[in-house]
Length: 93
Image (cartoon, rainbow, N blue to C red; front, side):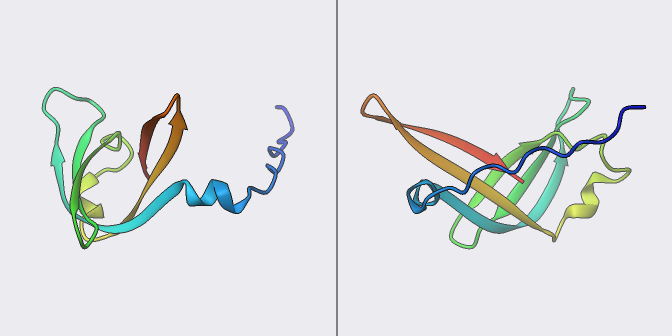
């Protein structure tokens, strides 16, 4: 068996990179099954001023995926300007 080698530490980012991120904490209010999907569950997450529906591939991760209802979740959004347009990438953690 090969010896474990941790990944190298990435360089520190500047304040400008952090300004491009929008990270929010929300409460998972509902976890629902996605029909005909072996992996996806539909999460309804309340961020206080708004709610989002997030699809997450957690169906096989837990014996009971609904056990995360009431727990906290992170949502990150990065905004990158490209060719004068804004592109959005959203990630739930």
